[in-house]
Length: 461
Image (cartoon, rainbow, N blue to C red; front, side, top):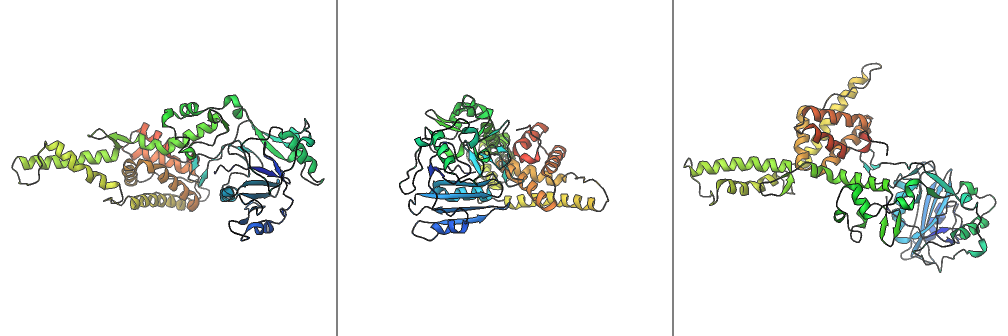
């Protein structure tokens, strides 16, 4: 999910963002999404607008603000929870549109991506569940929704606040210091038939978001089990870090559950490569399949060189070094070419497709057999041993592709055969334990890293 930061609330929003000013939005036709779109769409250079219906009902609409084109209006209309009216940077229009229409991550965002779907709060989406082509929704423990009525239980002073005008508006990096007064003015300006204040969501409170419990880079590195210097650089790779829950003079700070989710995804991405690594005879680290191929080719070439040297057959290109050293050098690039690079001698992409279809073919047969028996429970047979051998060969030469391979199997089994990812994950685990050349500990560690969250049993997160 993108990290779009709104810069102001529309005056007629039902769900104000804490700390942001209120902008007069009376020119915006909030009950007509097509008219909102037409406000900016094709009205001048750099102006744009868009509207879309939402699958569950309601709609979204966006428009560049003609009087201040650095900004855009974003409106979300929920059939049950009313409307959200935000002013955002115009450059963020497409990102927020994607989040609201396709992101499947609610419509209210607080504390660096914590999201509310009208029912519950969830942490920022970070752990990819390939079986559902989405981020795994992680609920917030002991979450409490803070409403406008909650905040105005201790009244603000409307006279100390003002409603800004869009033409002269310029976003501030700092939150308004007397925001409760601005909230009171917003509440005072609402019409009598407006959404009740106790149903206007403003913020989220949870134990994990208490400032004292947030962690910095050192804490993030400790949770992930990596050295602080190995974390993405905040200046050049900020997009690779988890969304921050707070920005401080000492840098970003994260809730511990967000840090754990980031660590989980980090290990899912990088862990298989480290797990299935080996050391070459040159002292470098490479996928264990590549190392095995190199070692095997080295022996073949060494024997050939030794035979030549013993006079069994003549050769003009035996090399001047020791046969083993020469063989190691000669064997390296053929080993690499077996499965790596654009000029690979082996069609690894075709192998991947073959493996996926072979597994799905076996699953389809199991499903078909069950359909023919009344009241029979689905029983999934083991993946064929020769297919498991192909899985072994593939992931040991490209371990970084393990998550993608297993995720696509789980996804297609769900879409084509209506099989729950958890059942498919259990089958993959059982089959690898039966026929893989990997040891049991390595198999369990690999699958804990690479299977989609929905395809493995996890502790309550």
